[in-house]
Length: 295
Length: 295
Image (cartoon, rainbow over all chains, first blue to last red; front, top):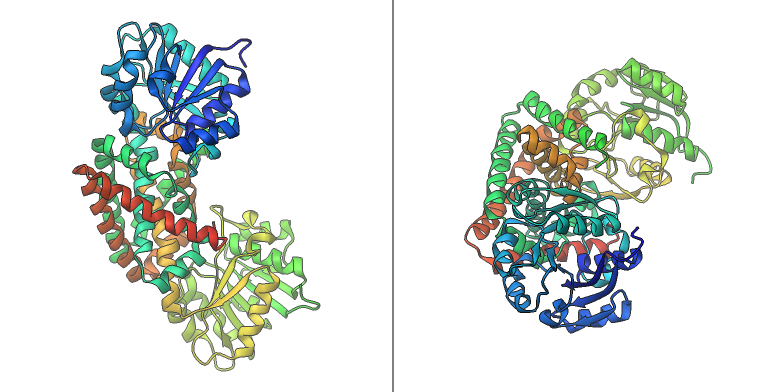
């Protein structure tokens, strides 16, 4: 916990699950003199006021960022170019601009050109979330013990990275610094592909006849349920992730399909040993997860 | 709970997660005069004796089933033909033979011909489990509030089905009676396909370069972790399920691939509306799960 606020005025743009959790964690730690919550939805702002985790609210991006020494954009990544253009004229010299987007190369592409000289740009991605969305779903403990990946462009001021790291650590997170392209590759495997598959498989089930579908719901406990939980995540956020990490995602999903075809062929031709061997290999990764305390 | 034992002597063949949980649930409810635990592994039998949830142990199938009024085969379905042949001469008239296999048409095929005149055959499948295996992993509460599907062949004695249902209910389960072919179709969607995909995707990740793989483990919390948990299940059991529900599984996985190809195409060509729409549909199934209290 910080002895004094890490920032004077933090502007959070987009108050969904992540933005509202960050606001709550900042409040929990006394990490900002003032938190301004900005969202384009009046309904969301009314929720924020009722829930009381921000010091002020606004629907105006320039108003939110004016005088802020930290701006964190917490909207779906597809909105970043517009938000960047809106904030640009109002950013204060010396401020840090960051975000919580799940793809990082596109953030460099869309937000990077909107950062004026003298403002620090430190994109970030907290690896945390639930299948729920919106400001009501957030909670202060969301980032406790989770990783937050920062992807500062080459030449970024070290002090700015350190200060943002201090905030995230005080919010409970652990920091990793990474190249944005590498981030996007890693997350394509660990997050974007699993979500793509979960959305697909739940969609396949919902195309079944009505009678079969009822039983899919009734007997979901046998594995399907975990997929529906993953697939319950926010549609706009995921649409934007898929569109903005296209190359890495298509590459890894192509690999997955080749591996699936191999396993299907083994099933068709009754190759028990091949099937067993491929299943056994997956236990090794699970064991490593348990060793790394990530299971 | 039963006032008196439902069966005099229950023989459990195969003492893994399911067999040992069933033994514990039977003991919890006082549902059998005697439970004999049979397993081909001396190590497993030593565990059973140490854990003390059975009244006797044996590695001999005929010895186990002799005098039993209920036999439940709890081994991987690939073993059923051999076990059926071994038990046949020792089965007592009036006994009920059941099982806990995850595929049911193959059980009718492999175990059915081994049931002598005067013995009742009521295949079963408790929809319960964890990613752990073996007799140490079992627990008496595994079936509490879960479905157990029974697939008695046409003409099966109604009293035998009722008596087996009584046992499962006393073990905490809810009963559903179903045609074996329909069971296999439903489970192909709710269980076998999700496992096939989980094994595949975790395998794809384990083929990545060592550096990337470390980070897959480090950032698994972003979705991948759920797949590794599903994929940690027993390799022999799953090999046998895949081989014995081949047609239904290949059919539904083919459908899934077509749906995946459609979503991939939409990603490649930047069709945001199509992607969003397909993601939104999956929420409907999730909502129905929550309504059905299966989430």
